[in-house]
Length: 321
Length: 140
Image 1: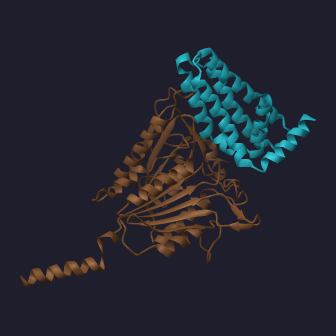
Image 2 (image 1 turned 45 degrees about the vertical axis):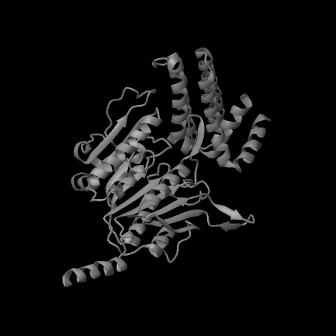
Image 3 (image 1 turned 180 degrees about the horizontal axis):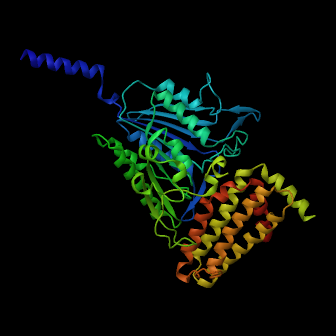
């Protein structure tokens, strides 16, 4: 009886010290680019891609009782009283389904030499062990080389693969992690060898499109399955996420859809970006592609896709020379 | 004189670049909506054919615009080629199988989706896009 009483008190005491709601199994980072032209139409109605993506991200975060969400919405520059710059972007932080922080910030205002995202995560992150770390980027195709004009209201700020990996590395640093378990890159055409091998240094699995991607983007609703309990096998989760996103795109669109899942460990260990195109040697084991040809157009009879974007503009100039 | 007028309009419109970008998408979407509510296939085909013709004429003007760099002209040509392909497919030219009457609604929806998501639309310069929109507006 004494033992049971002690055990009971231990459980109660542990419950006070470590309330169940504080357990975080998953950490999800959303980077949503909205500083550009994201208007699209569906059945005649107008939608803004970034707003739709944000809305679903917030829904996922509210449902995420076992998760922590950091959501960054990169919005166009704004001013007040004509001349004074105002904080343009939005940041949301949820833990266990509760909104803890919602504020505006300057995304191009480094603090102590770090990116704004690093600072915002660093202010809020706890040292909990988290099983699954997932990052998602939503936006237009990211240039391989740094280019001006990606941000409509900050055209003077260059953006490209190097800027992206720099920002993601900073986020990993703030989380005290070396790699993400999954990187969802919901952009057009970034499923190229150069891109995937570089991002593969920062994530175990990558989901990306090797072709044009409809602006309704890769649907993130499958993230809600993270709350089901039990352990997640990330290889299976990535395939399911990509499969669901593909199916939703398939029902909404008539254009070509290609969504690839890259196992970066296999890729980086066994291949070089140079030997992927045009032989597609990595197709079998390290890449899974979900593909549907367009209903019309030159490629409407295409049956298969390698899962890679092998166009010349996606090869770094020092390689193509 | 027309060149000067277009230059002034383009400069003024560039001040509100995002709205101007949206205008071309709205123009395409309006045409697709018109196709979907029209019953006669010949009329549907005419709406689409006219839209492609207007766009191709606007791209011709943009391609000849003296102030654009070679890179910009290249982007305009790529976009024009996309429009030209759609026009050919609608009519069954240049090796394309003609879009059947029953598929015209789907083809117009596909055209909107393909333009809205295309890399060419995203990368084309705002000034070029505005010029194209202005020429299309003048043709209407």
